[in-house]
Image (cartoon, rainbow, N blue to C red; front, side):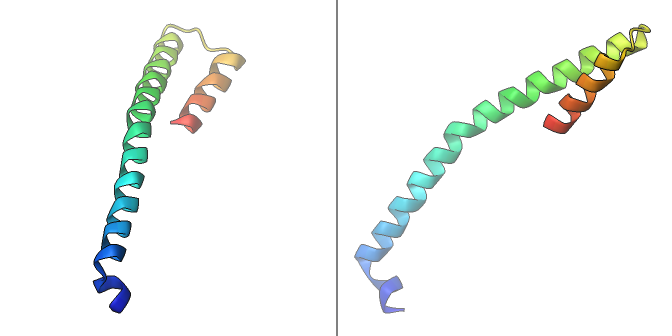
Length: 69
């Protein structure tokens, strides 16, 4: 309790948490963009399959994208 009630310790904890939050916010937009690109690629492959263009490589790529998603 003494450590938690210490102003210096509280400031250090808050500082570390703020640094961690800043690092997470940097990566989140990148991950969201990757997810959008993956979903678009999946949709494109599904459209190709609907048009009768199913090959081994198409199926393999779809499985890779689904795993990445």
